[in-house]
Length: 566
Ligand code: ATP
Ligand code: MG
Image (cartoon, rainbow, N blue to C red):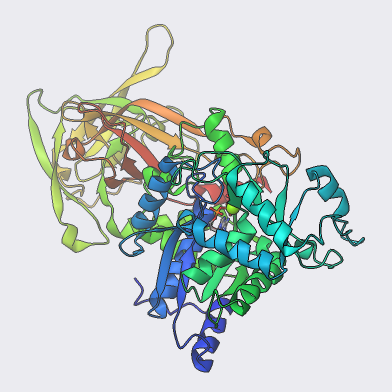
C-alpha cells in the first residue's frame, strides 16, 4: 500500500524535515500518542495515531504510547486495555510497554518543589471563586493573589502539608508564578497541583495531590525525550506555558536542551458523527447504542466490529491529511476508503436479505446440482467455489414487481431473467397469501439450456439476480446500519446533539439466507454479498445462526440521497 502512495507532505513533516537539516535534535524524531484513559478511542484519535506513528516510521524514529493518567477520577483499566487493543489493531508498534504519566508523579512533585524554591511557584489559599474572579478576562488583566508573595520557605512548608493531607480538598492550590497581566489567560499563574483525595487506578492512595494536565504534559514529553509533541489546535494557547515550564526546569538542570516542541494541528470532524469522548460516553450510558463497540459508534472498536479494516482507516487518515484550520470531513470519504479496500479483498457470496420463495416448476423435486461461482473478480487467485442449486430458491423481494414500472428490468410476470451462475428463469405464476393478498411465492420455469448463465441462442435478458437454494441456505441475522445522526453537524441547531439522533440507525433482518459456504465463518470475516453490500460476521453469531453487520453499501447511495435532498 505504502509503495503506491507518495510520502505525505504537510506543515508538520516540513518542520521535522527542517529540524533534521539543522540537526536541532541530532536527527532524532520521537513522537508520542498520549490518550487519557477515560474512554474508548474514536476516529479522531485514529487521525492522531496515524500521524504520530506514521511520522515516526517515515523518519526512522520512535513513537510512544503514553497514558496521560494524571486525573484519578475518570480513569479505568478497562479503557487502558481498549486503547492498547485499538492502537495494535491499527497496525502500530509502540515497543515493549506503554508509558504512564503516573509513573512520573515523583519527578513531577520534585519539579514542583524546585519551582517553589526558585521562586517560580506559590501556594494560593484563595477559594476557587476568588481565583476565578481575580483571573481577569480576555480584555481585562487579572489581579495578583494576596498570597502571591509568600516566601519560598512558607510555600515549601504549605506544599508539603498539602501532600501530607493536612488540608482539605480545594483548600489551596500550587500555582506557577508568571504574570497575572499576561494577554494570554493561560499564563496568568496557572494552577499546577491540586488537592484531591481520590484513588488512582495505578498509584492507589499514595497521593492526595495531583498535577494538573497542563503542568504534567510538558514534563512527560521531556522525560521521554520527545522531540515533536503533536497535539490538536485547542492547545495552541497553552504552548507559551509549555515552553515557559520546560525552560524553567532546564534552567534548574532538571532537563537538558534541546527541549521538545509542541506543534498543533486541526482535529478531525466527521459529518453525521460526534467525536468527543464526553458525548460518546453519553451515547453509551444513556442507552442510545449498545456499548462502546456498537457498530454505529465512531469508536475504533465500533468501526472494527462494523467490518472496517485497519488498512482502510490508515488510508483514510492519509487522504484527509493534516492542516492548521478546522474543517469537516465528509463521511462518504471514509466509506469510499473501506469500499475500495474490500473490493480488492472480500470474497463475493450470494445472500438474500428479504427472501421471496421461487419454485422452479419444471425442475425435478429431488434433483440438485452444484454450480461454479467466482470468489472475487478483482482477484483471480481467490478462485472459485461451488454453490448448490435446487428446485426451491429464494430471491430478493425487491427483485420482483408484479406491476413493473418502466425502468424496472428485474423479474415480473411473464418476464425472463438470469439467476447468477445458474439458469434463465421465467415467471409463470404469482402466489398470494389467502388473507393479506401479499405475494408469497413465485412459480417459474427454468431453461436447462442456459446452465452457467448463457443462452445458446444468444437470447438476452436485462437482469441478473442473486439467489440461494432454500434447501441448502443457512438462516442468518443481518443488521443494516444508517448514520447515527440525521444532521451533518449533530446538535448544531438545538445545542443538544441527542436531538438529532437517527431513530432508524439500525434495521435488524432476522430471516435472511446466506449460501452454505460461509455458514461457519468466524467473527470478523468479511464478504461482499452480491448486489447488497459488504458484510462482516458479528461476535453475536451463535453456532446455528450467524449474524452479519453491513459494513457499507456497494454503491455510494448515501451521497446520492444527500445530493437529492439538497
Ligand atoms: P475528546 O475531545 O474526544 O475528549 P481528547 O482530546 O480529550 O478527546 P485525549 O485522550 O486527550 O482525548 O486525546 C489523545 C490525543 O488524541 C490527543 O493528542 C488529542 O489531541 C488527539 N485527538 C483527540 N481528538 C482528536 C480529533 N478529533 N482529531 C485529531 N486528534 C484528536
Ligand atoms: Mg483530553
